Image (tube, rainbow, N blue to C red; front, side):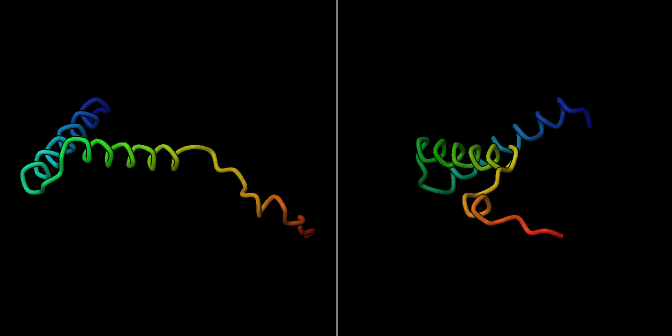
Length: 64
């Protein structure tokens, strides 16, 4: 499957899931958009470079 077709498939599946949740649950559009935005943030946070935490920076380096 080509890249554009994959993106289209994702869009269609997301649309289907959103439609199902609108029909089966009492979620309003603002809640759905908030959930999508939170998921978008999760995805973006998982794709960037990893930086050491403050604790890792404070630990002395061990010699081999």
